Length: 514
Image (cartoon, rainbow, N blue to C red; front, side):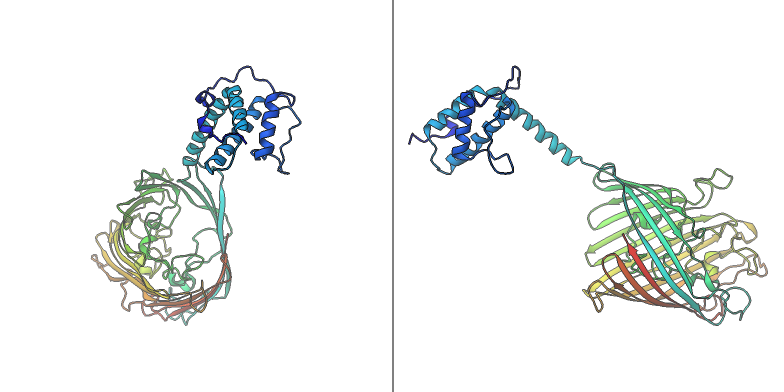
């Protein structure tokens, strides 16, 4: 056996990299170089390129193929020498001679590999897919309303639309990313809900839809993209709300598919003031992983060029929220919004987000108005304090308190003001009875006008609330699997209007997520 040497002892000229690949010709099986490489392959097993793990040395190879095989053998023999495995001196000599004959191809191949690795690293850092992904949900719900009288209209009037119903809502989100960090979302929504059953918003569902029944609509058109490391921007052609740019801190009740069944019990009304399909924009800035600030602007009729509408001349909501998350188990937020509703547009917008009493959503109206949408132009300042606390693995609390100061901007009620309050606390029991399930009990007071002035002493105006309403809800989410859940629930609203009897709502929701 000849003397053992290392590949590193070879003439350095054999390893020089050059990029010229001119005058290439195939290497025939009858040539010495072919036979030399074949002997190295058979002795050291340095090429395995076929499924049957054999080297087929019976056909011509291009110089590129030959150089690739030679390079593989050089790497294998170098590793064997590093592991102190014996290598024949004559084989080292063969390798040196072959390397000299094919130094152009080996050098060019190395340069191409380096270039390929550079381009691959760049693509990995800047990869994106413009493929649109579909996700969505479908909700079916069976429900009924009970009580002794209608919330609106003359006293003691029997409930007019309290029959047991079968309703649905379906959503399809088409999400596209152009950079891997941005998102374009187009949401198509269809539903067949009947709002304000028994004459009260307290009967509405978390996922109720104020739209034409069974008519597909673009419910959200939104593009979100980062600017640097800390800033995210939203541009919406249709529908933007405060909870797009800030965390509502309601992890157990806010979900449409697995959260509260009632509208009021799901989320603070400050997030619902612009719950429409108007355009807008927003941004969120993270000062740290614990502290963030979100802000947005929405114009309900921003798509219309008519007088008293447009982006800055009609209904609008501008809001902001500062959120502090001291730990993974706690969260605190303070939110503020400013809203303006033009005269006689209360059929589309409500001062309190359509979650409470009529005198909270349309405070400057008349008791016997012919159309609910009639009302004086109104501005409002809204402030809410929110929080969530995971006390133990199986017990959490969340809730909010909110105050609204509303002011009549014009019309026969000009100068009148209203103080509107609401609050809610929820007690959540995750993994109740079974992992993945959820039980929740909530109590609170939906929006109501505690004081409502009538400076002009007009007759028959909407009165302030004499008996404050109360709200209670209980629901249980049974997870069939990750995509299907069944949720029975019951809630009650007392004093849905002044001196009116309570309304009871029972429902069973089945949700499908995909």
